[in-house]
Length: 301
Length: 301
Image 1 (cartoon, one colour):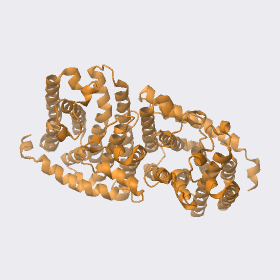
Image 2: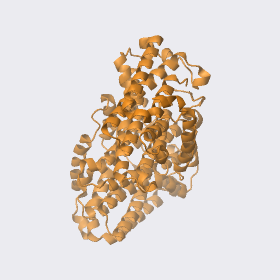
Image 3: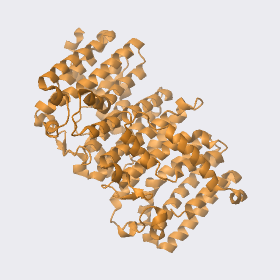
Image 4: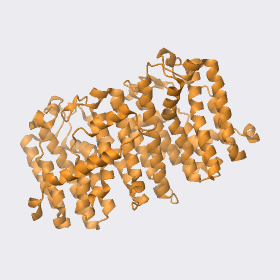
């Protein structure tokens, strides 16, 4: 994959993100009470990496479909991701005061409004997916319905919420590595896999490419988490926008607390290699996804 | 509408409810963590009136469609209704310790699990709607998508969540009657209107019947709330399963605190009359819906 070296991921991401921000604003619910909308936007526009929409668009582009034409799906993903962060930060959950260098939603708007802003973001995300055929004349209703159903699976009691429950139940326990992986395969992995899967359902590539992307998405989710744990151990507070060292302080089982830092870094490098190798069947077209995986492994926030 | 007198609503409801309970259990997410599933079922199976599914089924039956064939939509409604109750009862929201005569979800499972159980119920409700064509071979995907989109509108930032935000913002304020109505038109009305609307979308009656049902649903939502406020003023704790007098104690603006008890009762009777009159274009077929409205106006819990 020689093109990777010539591909400027940052420039690509900034184009996607600029279009994304505009589209997201267009899709906000207009008749929402002003304070609710403010709370939703506070967290939506709080400097997130927009990683899920970017992964989705990059997958479509790699499959020869114009990813920017399907940004609405990315907006739905980012809204649902933001809902999960707002609820996760609540005092009854992780009790975080800061996120991305700013006070968390409930610190600014109060707990009740934060709960409702999260509820609204999740619901509006479903609305946006369900309205795809209204906004895109050629979008088949059956495909939109498939995206809704997959979304619910990725986010619900067998997906992301399951991961959060496992995480909750694992607190203060000595989890084995498999336990930590089980948490993250659901808590973050299911959603990242959905981003790739949704692009695959839209582009309908040959089976070989579909299988390759499914393996890639699975490794990418793992990579994401291992690097998260590494950053919590060695990251810089100002860059991270949150306080590192929290996992160790809370005696939370992570890749670093179980394997040690060096072994976790070796694992990360091995998973990155596997993610890139998984892309082989896509040939040169996979350069964006390869760059994304390298970015995930090297990111400092 | 002479048949009303011969129609046994309680017997009808018990048939619908018996089938409903079975179907609901079949549609629960099988791979959910046991404790999460337990929390979801605790509130789902906690003796709710199943009013939304019943209204939906009765509307279909009135339009000549077999309502029981579409129970999945009712299950989705009841799951979403239950999510809203769990989140509404949280300490940061209404801070209720009892619901339907039992400790509220967070009192039994803790706040974190209650938040997640609510999140999961909302998400699974969308899954069930999106999977209608998977479970019913003749269910058009475009219709399922329409039900998903309407559901999100009824529940989201312009629907139920909007009502909850208005309610939150109205606390401790002297609201005029229009303010109280605005809250309830969103907080409970949007969802009840959805139950009737969903049946209409499935049965596709002539325009005249559709308009009649839309007027009926609007009056029914109002009727529901006025009677709720009356019950809070004069209801019996053991029958209600919660403590009456809470509105007055919290100095909450209700139909009773604004109008006084007698005027509120007169308003209720007038709205009931309007609801029944709205059904006229449906002729004799509307007897179930008329009985439902009379039940709502006369209920003691």
